[in-house]
Amino acid sequence: MRILMLTNSYVDRTRGGVELHVFNLAKELEAAGHAVTVGRTSPGESQLPVDGPALWVIDRHTAGTEGRARTRRSTGGARFLSNFLARVQIGRRIGRTLRKAGLEDRFDVIHHHDFVTSAVIARRLRRSGVRQVWTNHLGEFLILRRIPVVGRWVTRWLTTPFQAATGPSPELADQAAVRCPIRYVPNGVDVETFRPAGDVERQDARSELGLPAVETVCIVPRRWAPSKGVVFAAEAITLPEWPAEVALVFVGAGESDFPEYAQEVRGLLAHARGMVVVVDSVDATGMASYLRASDVCVIPSLLEATSLSALEAMASGLPLVASDVGGLPELVNDRTGLLVPPRSPLELAKAVSQLAALPAEARLTMAAEARRFVEQSYAWSNIAVRISEMYDEAAS
Image (cartoon, rainbow, N blue to C red):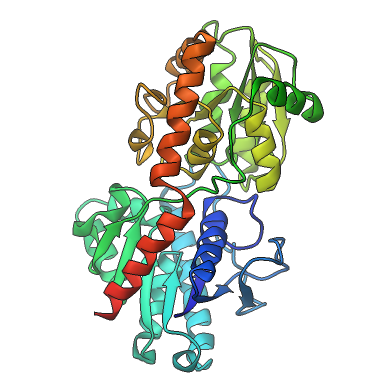
């Protein structure tokens, strides 16, 4: 099967979950015998490895991040409308370009990974004869769906052009909110790159990365964006309930498109009661090293699907402290970590203290359970099979 993966987010694997999703899914589909091309609607050079799928930069003049809000109130009124209209404009431009590209002779399936932009593109390509499917990665969909009265009408209208879809959490696979058939297929994780470390390897990794020599290292592998809740982890370490022997390591500070938000996080960290390390950004291999050097992972998100960062941490044998939102409750139970209410620095600090106090045997048991759970349900080879089934569904 000839597949075109269409996305704005395919510049750098350190940027976020969509990049990794597309990159790893494409590699698994190619390993299964399919031909995959990633069509990127954003300009510039890609920093992704050359061993990935073929890359097609569709319109080098499109400002892919045009209209993106840059404050903590990134989903409010005028800013959201500006983002929405910018994505419509991008979709119209890319759609015109693709209509002239003879897609029916080049591809059997177009797999979209954006929402508003993809909906506009898909509508313009309805007569191309190519199957069009979609993966719902969050963003505008949940914001639109929650608009009173008209929200679900808008999301259903936007999803009309797709023949099939997947969502990486039950909330994102809500059939009532979309017009096309949609199924739940979680995000996957690279279980070879992300693996547990023994005590000696963990200590060696900490030394190599220059991390503090403390009893427990707690990692927050998050972009500094409002929806990721990083500010609440930063506030947690300022509280008396934060255990003094636990260092907090932030990985992803350099990926923020929200300077005011990043400034707020740094302001809180200036009052930290424990040791703090801030790392701008790393690729997948670097992230795997930081996870192997850590003991606990914090995912303080306000909105989340099946968090890729959480899956990578679990594959690395880390117990989680995660917000009780989106798809995170599917990953976290009393055998793999602790759930806390969103926006609650106090509960987050207490949960980290509870996990840090566990005896070594209990931590090893939790690490083994987290790893087993991910290998069984979230390895990319399994996810690719389920995505292939969606392609077949779209043809029927």
